[in-house]
Amino acid sequence: MHYDAIIIGAGIAGASTAYFLKQAGLSVLVLEKETICSGGSNPAGAFLSPKISKPSPYKTYLNNAFLFSTNFYKINFPELFYPCGLKKFPLDEEDAQKCKSYEPFIDIPCEKIPEGYFFPNAGIINPLKLCHALLEGIEVKEHYHVKDIDNFSCKHLILATGSDKLPIEIPYIKTKNIAGYRYDVRFDDDENQNFNTHKDLSLSAFYNECVAIGATHIKLSQVNDLDKQAQLDTFELLGKAKKLQPLKNLEILETYTGYRNTTFDYFPIVGALIDADKTLKQYPYIKTGAKVPTDSYLLFDNLYIHGGLGSRGFVYAPYNAKILTELIVNNKAIEERLSPIRLFQKWAKKLS
Image (tube, rainbow, N blue to C red; front, side, top):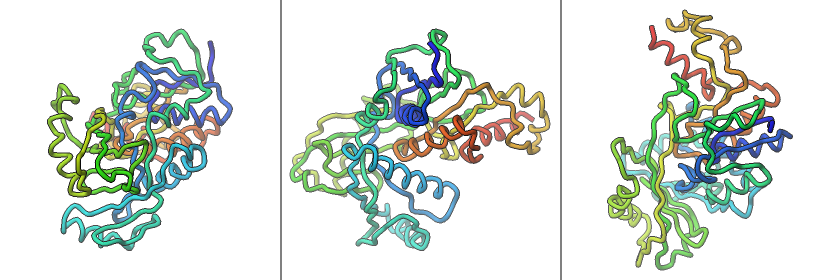
């Protein structure tokens, strides 16, 4: 059977891409090796928050994605989005001084509060229900091995496999995995927890009959059993959470674990994939750092990627999916800081 687009991966990147492509009128098939939202997306806390920092391209991108995605959720999935706001507290006195120096550059609605900042437009969304809602009316084949993809044909193929290895070898796509935990908990007076809180981890508002405690930047390079590691780290992480909220008579309802895939410059990867062999043969001087016009790179035929979302997948994914859809449907160029081009250039220089 023929489709306009086949997407590999049914996490937040794949589901968002499928949604926007369908909205653009394309026929879409999503292939998932497990189940919808079963990879790194399901254990995500799905906290939607902006960034405080000095001006930078990354901050601009992140906050633009935050504004787009929170508005997207509010309009299209209001029953799943809780715009509860976020109280953000500096880690220590040194961090407090940094944040103070950043105050002139805060470009998201914000209120100064004792010891920190309150972002009223921040919120939280349900990961599993959202991915299912995004994929409503779209054909999804779960427990499907990509090796069987020859059973279908398509014009456009999009890789959105998250923390899993890409099904096609792309030598210049260099990423790393970070481990993430989420604990869904109940405690005394939890229903009065009506905003998200963040310090060195995140504590959600009371939402979906529980409070979520999330910690995402856990660098565990040599962990064989992530579920076991989450149990071992419970005391330390909940101890940090209790500094934000007493958590009296705490009950852990469920523990979620998973890996998130991120790039070394923290920008996601969105766009058409370059054929490395053909491009280097055509332009061997790229290895010396020479610049080649963006539209001169030799691409695989209609092969794209949406990945490297890291710990902010539910902020980035709808924004990126809209951008990728405009490339596929309207041939609208993607800025280089998101495109695979930036990764190819760095990789090619190391070949000299």
